[in-house]
Amino acid sequence: MWVLAQEDTVTADQLAAAFRALSNPNRLRIYQVIVDHCREHGQADLANVPTGCAFGDFMQRLNIGASTVSHHVRALSDAGLIRVEREGRRRFCHAESMMQSRLAHFFEI
Image 1 (cartoon, one colour):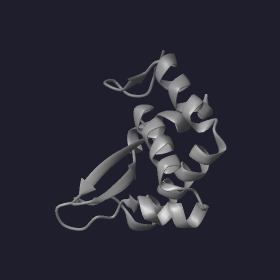
Image 2 (image 1 turned 45 degrees about the horizontal axis):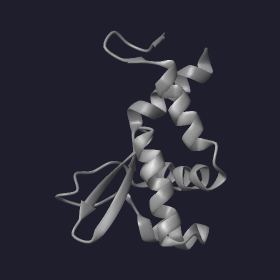
Image 3 (image 1 turned 90 degrees about the vertical axis):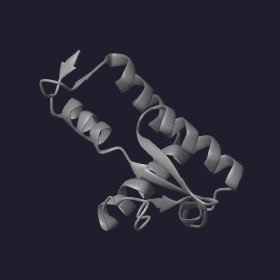
């Protein structure tokens, strides 16, 4: 087990799930788009302004169909890499900063 801070630990299973999710090229590309979008636009409360990356944004950028995107987004979410929030009929993806920190810390060792 790697210790990141007093209250924050990550297990080998959690890291393996994240790496497994990112091992698919489409998921890796989707994750990169989401992370880049969140870096450019920051994180915000969806009640005010949705700054997450909308599904349609990366479907167009990556030329991936809606059903394929949904499948890959679910895998990224299940692995704790992103969270998905709904606003009406639209879905927005946000990079989970805690998991980004965990992955970065893993590679620093």
